[in-house]
Length: 237
Ligand code: SAM
Image (cartoon, rainbow, N blue to C red; front, top):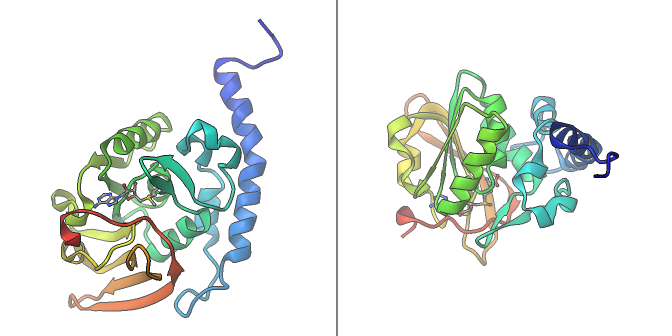
C-alpha cells in the first residue's frame, strides 16, 4: 500500500482542500459577471449568497468524469440529457428569491441537487421535485450524505407544484417553461417570489421574477436572457 496517499476521511479532507481554491476562483468569476446585467438586478449578487456558494462542494454534485470542471462557471452534463446550471445563474436566481431562515422554498427541477444545497443554507425548508427519478434519487443521496437535513426531494412532475407543503415564500424553477404553470402561481404566498425562465427550447428565454403582492396581484420583471433545458410535465401542455 502507498502510505503517501490519504485514505478514508483523510482522503476526503485532502480532496476537499484541493477544491477550496477552485471554489474561490468560481466565486471571483461570478462576482465579475454580477451587477452587469439588468434593469431589475442592478445591484451585485449579495455577499451572503456568494459566501454560501464558497462553501457548498459543487464537485459532489457532478459526475466523476466532470470533476476537473466542477468549479468552472459553466453548466455541466449530469446524465439523462440534463445539466447542473451555471454557477452565476444559480447565484443570480438564489439572490432574486430573497429568502431567509423563516421561509419555505419550492424548487422545480432538482437535477444534481446543487441548487437545493445552496437554498438549504438560506431558507428554513426546501422542497425540491425532479421529474427524472434516477436524478431525484441521486440528488437525495448526496444531499443526505452532506447533511442538508432541511431539504426534501421527491420524484414527480413539478409543473403541478407540491401542494402538500404549499404555500411557499419562494418558488424557483430551474428549467424553461413555455408558459408559467398556474399551480405555481397558486402555491405562492402573498408577498412571495417566483423565479422562472420562460421561453421555448429554440427561442430566447427570459429569466423572470414574478412578485405576488399582499392582495394576490402579480408583478412581472424581466431579469435577463438565459438558456435552460425545457420544463416538461402536465402543466406545460
Ligand atoms: N437545479 C438543478 C441543479 O442544481 O443541478 C439543475 C436543473 S436542470 C437545469 C433542470 C432539471 O429540471 C432537469 O433535471 C429536468 O429533468 C428537470 N425537470 C424538467 N421538467 C420538470 C418537471 N416538470 N418537474 C420536475 N423537474 C423537471
